[in-house]
Structure formats: C-alpha cells, structure tokens
Length: 107
Image (cartoon, rainbow, N blue to C red; front, side, top):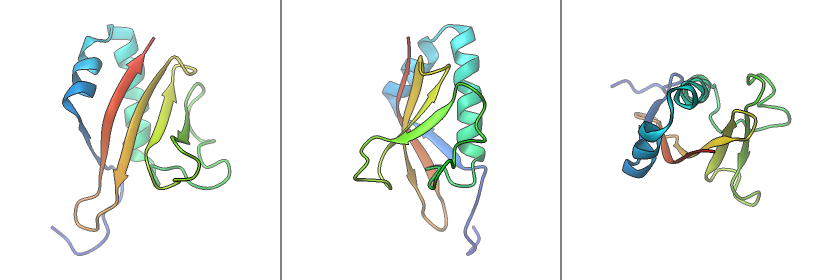
C-alpha cells in the first residue's frame, strides 16, 4: 500500500443481494449496468459533488444523493434513462477507498 491518496479507478464491492439482482438481469440490461458501473468507478469524485458535476455522464445517466440533507451519504446512479439504478456509498479512506453498491435495480 501507499501513503498517498488513491484515486480512480475505485474498487467497487457489491452486497450479496445487489450481486444476485445484477446476475438476474437480462444480458442487454446487464450491459447497460456495466457501462454505468464503469462511469462510477472511473469518476474523479464518485459523489459527483458540485453544480452540473455529472454533466459528463453519457446520455441516460445521472447521479443524486438519496437524501439532500446528507450529501456525503448514499447516492443513486440512474442508468437507461431512469429505468435502472445503483444505490451506493463511497468510503473515502486514504489507503483503500471503495464504492459499496447495496442495491441494483432495473425495470
């Protein structure tokens, strides 16, 4: 390990339930989900803080906090124009920052 702050790509871990939901998706939805995950783990700030910070996301993707009063809490990454989402938290430890995805949904 290094003493310097680690940046993207971030490590992403899935809860068991989110992983089971991801694996149950049809192939085309899973491809959209993997594209959304790739955007998330390569973002300089996984919380997309600031005005229009998520404007560089591909069409059909957006990010918002679950609770506006907790900007450093859980966030939702919408994909496929809101038909699916990943709910996640970012643990910004110095030695091992990671994204924890606890919900995966697509309709």
